[in-house]
Image (tube, rainbow, N blue to C red; front, side):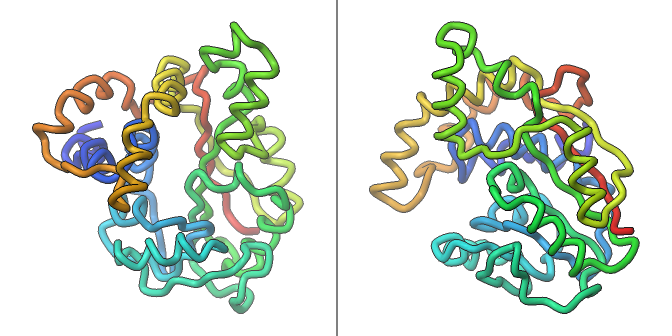
Length: 256
């Protein structure tokens, strides 16, 4: 916990992201503290590069993403030595090339998940660690409004969050085995109360959407005086504690 507070992941994410995304990303950033990342490092689904720029103390070797607008935004954060616009199921790299891999809150969005995992295993060296995190099988059942509006609301939230894979560790273990990985460790995190804060953020975050449309930035005033109250409110939810009832899961796998 002290490492996370010292680096102030929450405020760093709040400076550039809608508060609900910043909350989740701050928790996830803390998990990479102390994890070995031998080079070269492969980031599958790097997005706009903001997460890597905040989380890691050095540039990662390669960030891959299929979306052109993500590649455009990622250049400004300068978190990678190289950016590659490509599909994770057709990675343009030689086999056994990377010494470690990460994929932060990405794999839940991928329909062809088995193909992406197999291709990720192909480009990693034998014994290379692969770290990723995703919403788990309890995620949608714990939504605050699911208890009121039932399955139609769950399906709608699944749609707006673009979530294809919200599964148990057992399901992920089977996928990893098929792809050529061994699952070494996993833990649940992000309490149901934290999930509710994230859920409501999708609705209360409208001002950030307007700011993005008008200025190209989610947050206009990145200072403590503007963000301090939100930061203070979110601190109680920004816990990196491992929880039995956590709604997300962090995985540590290794290529066979």
